[in-house]
Length: 251
View 1: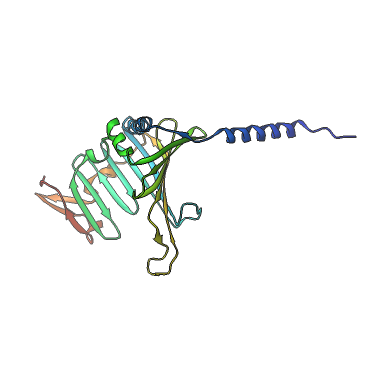
View 2: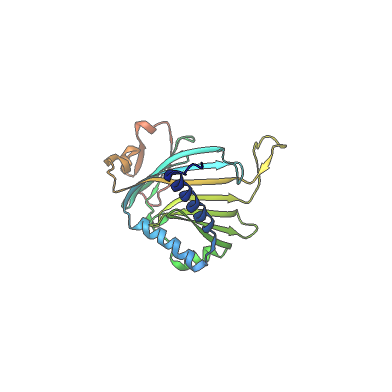
């Protein structure tokens, strides 16, 4: 006598079938430069409309395009409070407030101080600017990954990158950026017989928090230096560092 298949088994089979069909249905679609420019504009608008936020930023390098084992990994963060921000990326702290832009390189033991420059990070391109940048692309395509969109841009021969991929969330935030470098590099630069490969770099943006609370010290230049008339003096914590004063006008 043939045994009846239980309802739970039938449900699981149905789910697997639906998942298989969904995976087959997800295919790459070509994207025009105008539409890609609008996507970039949406990303810029999403950040502009979020004046206070923080996120974890992770840089992960790989020896080639396909390997899953990281070569190097660096975990940092980006914190923004209106026109002030504090980032820690690839071992370098950068702080900007209404007065100054400060960079601290712990490995080189240098503190650089310059005039504040909001235009360098918070202003975004317009549609025509994005179109101009996209002229170097030979192919732009997109595929759905859950509720996110994965965009792939392939570049002309001779470009620094062979391709670039972006994962963008439904509300326009960049979730992951991948660069596929076009130039081969040696795994061991000191060994002339070392294997060469084209590396890739993945930058992920995670744990986005909107409207977090920051301490008063987070963006305060007094954490790094004090001011005596027009002269800057490094704090006790950074007294062993070299000061590079790059202010255009002393204030």
